[in-house]
Length: 279
Image (cartoon, rainbow, N blue to C red; front, side):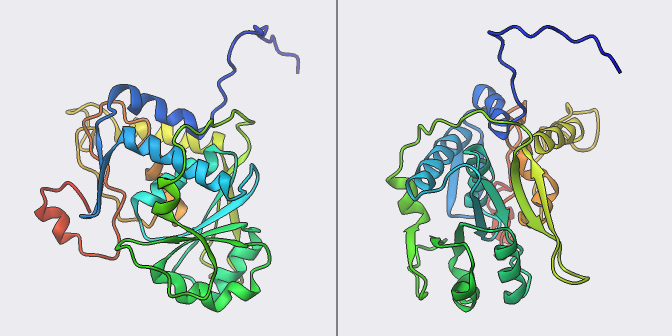
């Protein structure tokens, strides 16, 4: 079928649908909006963007390149949120590892995804220790910790997460690339056979985020849930992108809604006692 095409102006920016563009609006309209993780971390969108840049710089310094797969084994946390942006934004692929699977299934998913790097919380070091000698591609390990614990693992860690960010530059130059590039990958729960791999492109995730905004960021009075509310998702961030909620932090247009996709295995009672400002 012949279609009438619009002539492209050479100087015009094509504006690919990349995850990095989701951060423009909050940084312009609500840079001081807070993101809170338990009683451990409280920072603004502005700081989030800086930490995203530091994480990308740190990973690049360890040898991560476009197309590499970076796996994360963590509870819902501010670190996970940063990984959701920094890793795809630098052209790499984020693998959200289902930590509820058995060690053998976790090993299978890491090898199936051809993970190059693994970020692992201290709570999951026993799992990592039991499978590390059978990993086919992963050879860089980064330690994640809530309380500053040091590794008791036999794995050779290239860095501790906060140390890595502290020594890395925040002004990472995130490139443009094809919006159909893989951004994330994860696996089913393996109810029939081995867990099945799934992946999403930048374009798919940006469109999903914009669709979610249509229902979650309406003005007050238009529906029961709107952009002035406090939102505390319970869905694990390894599970289908926490049902897509993790990207909505980026383009929240109002700057009046706190983000709380950071629930862990710890009690939510303390969050409520702190005024509903963390979880």
